[in-house]
Image (tube, rainbow, N blue to C red; front, top):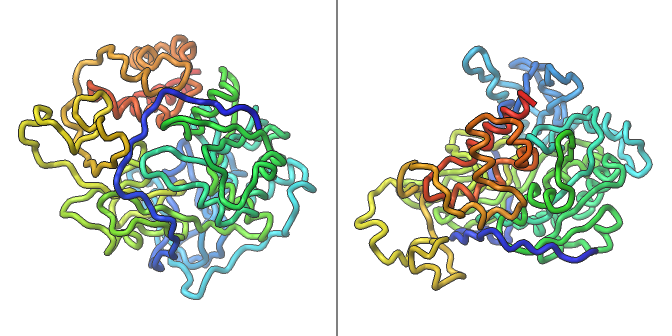
Length: 451
């Protein structure tokens, strides 16, 4: 293991409501849903209809542009409804789970080290596990026809209230190691594993070094972002493609080869200052949000977010967990006006710029709400972005190039290296209240379309 990579830029947002290291099974849910909109640029073609009986791991639909790319049911049961939106766009495939437990599509148990790369790809495509593998640039599902310059797995997360990935990996360390072995085969021995200050539970440095290159990162958020790690290990140039996989998805891939089935249950952290006793819950993929939040929230007005407060999406109790969701955050809505606003000392307010006296207590946690404390203003040069983005990129110039739709300039300034989550802190500290992540998303879409 080489020398640690220390990142000075960034900021840790300490919030109340960290999940305790306690795991429980989530209550059973009446419906499970798979949502095609979770997958950008997907054109789904259905393989099932209402009334069909399913086994867990059976294909529900495939991508019209890539017919080999299939998406499987996380549970066994009956298809009860296909929810459509405008122009008959498929929004959800709702499944009534079996009450007596899952029945699985069986696959041969296999040692990935004894399989060819082509055989591994075929197994991942057939089982529905391939969508867990995504690529940079653009954060899309990886193309099985390409060979990446490397595959990256970040074993720690520094986002606000993020799940303790070391704890989650430690729940199934053997499946995690098997999943890493699969990825190492796919990458032709170019697997990169990012670690934080501590090792995942149940694993040693020798375990990880036997499976890939280990890199240690130290520093504040966003040190745990896989995009930041890629930038410091193997920067992406135009035409390059690298893949990345979340540790929980690595575990699911490992189960496929060690257990011979697509077992898509995962652990979700229920976090936030409006949660009674935040902790971890084992859930079925696509389970209803209500089954996790009912009876566990406090406060008259709350916002439920799938993900963390910086990059997550607002959801509601009737919704279903998205395909890549590993965290639910519940925080207060910030609808009430504030008397005197910034004129008060602000001991209860988090301040990056030392506007408020909260900087005197750096280890304090806060119960922040959704109030943005102002509306969008003129886009000015303040240097704020540069202090929280640990990448060799000029963020303001890149954003202005995107707004001007200057593709050549965007490429020179590193559009292919970034994703929305890498700029989330820039949006958080922005005095002008600019929707930075939206601009980055538009820039990536434009670069993919025109470049």
